[in-house]
Length: 363
Image 1 (cartoon, rainbow, N blue to C red):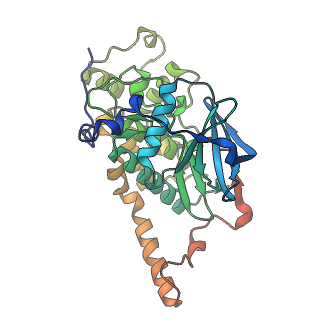
Image 2 (image 1 turned 180 degrees about the vertical axis):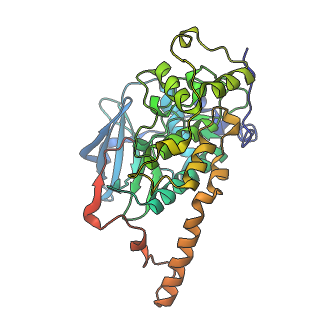
Image 3 (image 1 turned 180 degrees about the horizontal axis):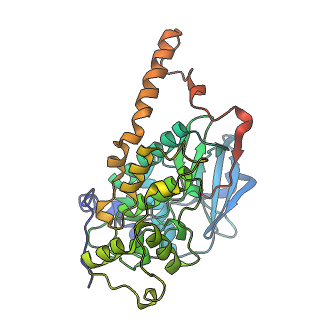
């Protein structure tokens, strides 16, 4: 039996909440009518849903409709309960309504509309800014006792014109309870933490922090995804070729995890690689010393050693954001403008309006 691990942060959040906060199985969903929503165009398609731009006719409000494919009733109830609990949370996509088609009874979730329009090339300061916004979203959901379990670029919507970010697709999110064993069939392969790949079920919020590390690595090294295995077993091999096999075996030994025999012939023996090995002339402006140090503290085998979202936000990598904020304030005051107006926003833009690209998003 593997050693039971408990999150070093926010471990007792759900234990301190009333049962109806996390007991989604007994949650009563009040479904409204879908007739008030008119679909405009399809934005994307996922394994469990199709997503459309839509308009609420009674208010002429633009929104997003996530039409759910046939899945377990409990999965739908869990996603709705999570979204209701996180409503108005920082950088969390807002659930506006839950509806069913009056004829087919097909369920759908109604979300705020986000103009997912990001620049073709992010500047170094852009990367720092948006990663910090992502960490705010994760610290908030973790503080509410919820793991996202599917952090990846496709689930991050950026409106670069408004400098806003939203964390999307909470279909795999789950409530954290200490020493509970969770399903390992979560997260997309390229962003799966090692614990999922070695069948360790006592995982926690730190699962999301590994995924953040993978997102950061893909951006700063201009290699997305950074770890790209052909299957789950090969995914662990790809990780071991970078982080080394000794660290993996130390991790397995610490938590008394039994590694599947199938790895005997494919894992091999690999030394730990320096992050500098992945820098080159094209990415050196993004792969700064601070970026590499933050990455190193996120991509750790041992989930207990990874930075939490709050710890990551306090990393020196984000110091330039405070300096930029101070400069913008000085600029506004000096120009006689309102300090709340972003008159200096062009200082951090990757380019003008024609450098932005629309991206298909699944909510």
